[in-house]
Length: 126
Image (cartoon, rainbow, N blue to C red; front, side, top):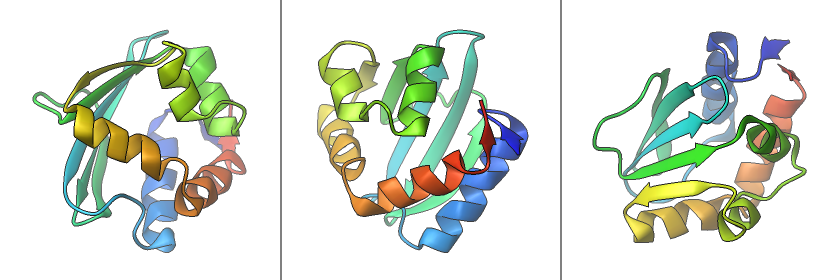
């Protein structure tokens, strides 16, 4: 089991995303995620709709930046909290390109996201 948000978990994201095929939206996107408790940060880069890279640490000049409390990040990963709901309730703070943010939130409502999230949740220690 990979510890949530740890290096092994990021490796699992890469593995599961590659098995899922096109894990993201069409086009290119860079995302910075900051989990507010413990100051965990990582970033992901999507190129032509597919995950190109995911790595620990911040990404300067990301298209979209998300800040989420740890409890909400865990709830999202477990499927207990929809990312769009977290955003609409103000539980997820955002910055950056609003159009790309909306595309990212729309993708989180698609079956590909659910499949990726479920695959990760089954191999994640919270």
